[in-house]
Length: 496
Image (cartoon, rainbow, N blue to C red; front, top):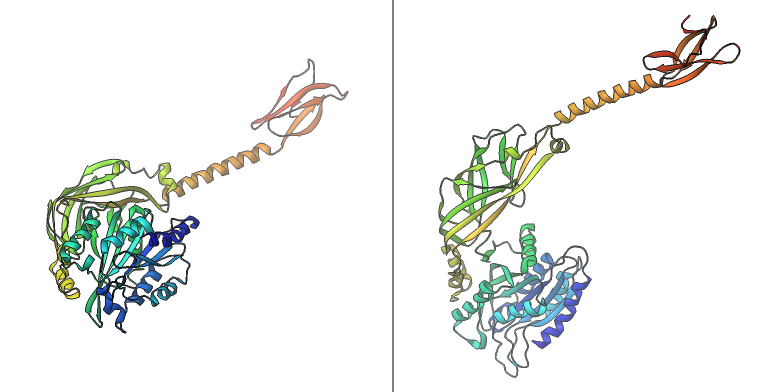
């Protein structure tokens, strides 16, 4: 283990150089104990190429990568054993992983010809505490599911310890398993299948694994549907809208990524909507045998109960949705009026009210599907592992949060009307400014002499007699002219 610690120091140091978005550390654990002998000795084995292709698909530029082999740690034979550590670039991850695996073979016990045993729990714990250093990341485990430390034949008990680590380990937030068909024949053993596990460590690791699953990067290498081992108490179901009734101007749809959208006409004022959903189970390979379902909506600051036509769920299998009718309150009172500033700012686009729908399943009973049991028995004959997929008895409830957006589409009419009014006001203001700035002509008679004077509105100018003395002031406004400050006896008048 100390050797593994020293070998991982360089990889952990790589994380300090990551810039920009959070980089995901990946630890790939590749089993090379005796039970894996056919995966190494069969010339047709695709085991090593699979690991290289998977690493090349999921490790992104800037991510830290540790590749290690594992069996069971013994004095003089540490396990896991680091084979490669790097900060990923855009092109060489797959080739470097393939090169590091090229010379890897099944391990033997120190000082003996006996093949090494396996300890899955030891390897995963070492990856979490040592390779990741307690930080978030993803641990990938490639194994044939034979967990037999010290050649212990009580594999069921050993697998139970392994899954106790999975279900009760606080560091592990999410686990996906990919059972793969890979028939191989070795000198000593033969095998039908291989299991790839993805352990998401911490919330950030869980989000990174979700993103990889959603992006299709994993599916580009592994086409099998992932089996969920953890969590089994959250994000267990989702709602897919099917039909909206008795709510003109309201339509529900599903956005990319699974979020719900409620598109509402700005004139719609129906306070309630009858919505038919398809309730879907997201926990492959588990069937929800029975549960009590409750739902709430939190929209525009309002927390309201969603009335369900049925509060019981039974025999809900993955991939087989069940219809569910409901009555849901709509936040029409909180929608901005089409003449409001918020609506005018959103003209031509959508005004969005974010919210969520919360689903709670109480008295939840899960069962592993028979088809999955049969598949596991075919891939790993004699392995009691499918029984270990049984959910912990402590998980009797689950929650699911579905983001929802209420989108109000305001047209350009009000904005265009206000624009027209604004243009009219600008035109009037322009006309007034032109009128205000245009010089006005005034006819003034001084001592029987007709004079023509020009002045702009808002100005005053002096009037002089023939001798050059000031006899009055001419004041000009928008509405005409007037004489002010007339000197006594002055012969001055407007007009002729």
